[in-house]
Each structure stands twice: as structure tokens, then as C-alpha cells.
Image 1 (spheres, rainbow, N blue to C red):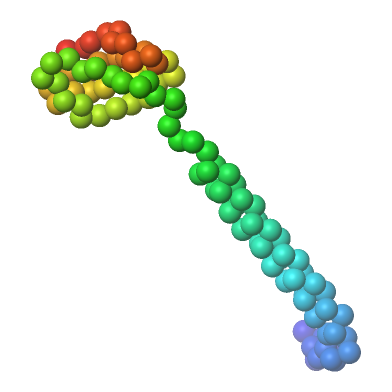
Image 2 (cartoon, rainbow, N blue to C red; image 1 turned 30 degrees about the horizontal axis):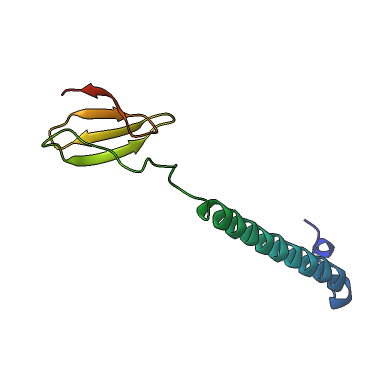
Length: 101
């Protein structure tokens, strides 16, 4: 390696490179800021939607049954009782099927 290969960069030569670096850092900050705004907007839009489907006015459980869990399917309401029985209701609240454990 020759001694004259190591040459110091003068401030006048470094100035355009520093300007370019400053532009890149500013663009990166702007893109990251826009990304945060987009994520916040998507979360706000998604979380402001109604999370529950339309429910019937009432659901009548069989005598002695107590609901432990409720799940919404596309066309059904599924109720799991304390005894483990699975009750399938339609969207009007009518019992359609029972599954014993």
C-alpha cells in the first residue's frame, strides 16, 4: 500500500456528502412518521367498528342450564352450558340443536 493512497478528505469535499446524508436521514424520518400515522389510522378504523354481530332479543336456555361460554358463528349462536352441553341457536334465538358431552 503506497503512502499517498491515504489521503484526508477536506471539509469542502465532505460537505456535499454530509448534505446528502442529511437529506437521507430527513426522508427516513418522514417515511417513518407517515408509517406511524398510517398504523394509527388503521387501528382507529378497525377498532371503531362494531365488534359484535346483531343478537336476538332473548335466548331461552333449557331448565337448570347456566351459560358458561357464548360463540358467534356465521349463522349460529353457540352456547356452552356449565354441564358441557353445546346448544346451537339460530339468529332469531330459536334452539336448533343440542350436543351432549
